[in-house]
Image (cartoon, rainbow, N blue to C red; front, side, top):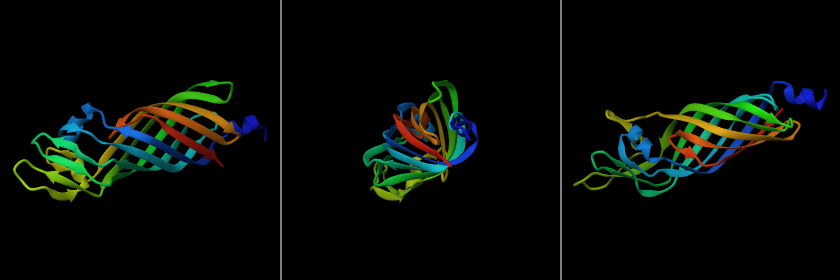
Length: 193
């Protein structure tokens, strides 16, 4: 089969993605029932993908977001302060890459959209005004009016550039908006079988 046929055929593959930095913007505080949020960290994803080397693809991935230690990571509306210590967000995500244009049958520019669910792991220190600090589960980081949420929604929309570096291998750079944090830069590798 020609190289052209190899790149246009639907294939299964594996994908790996790492982001050295993500951060939660101020406007997401309202979504977390808080007045101020200072969450940031790093992230990696690993998953199974289906698609074309010179086309779009979708993937199902395991996501792990590490959360940096902060003394005032989340300040709730009632003045409660949550401090993070060694926390992570573990999640499953379905995402898709849609190329909007291809340059010289090697470089693609497009959009990646993803959605998923996850759970915060670990404990946080909760300090309420007039009370002694106490250790509580990390699901307290994301809460609604009724209380902590056991499951956290994930979502992202990112501008993506992909380069075919070998017959069945793509390298991607991406960045954009998301919840519960924006990825400043994601670097990924997709290997089709």
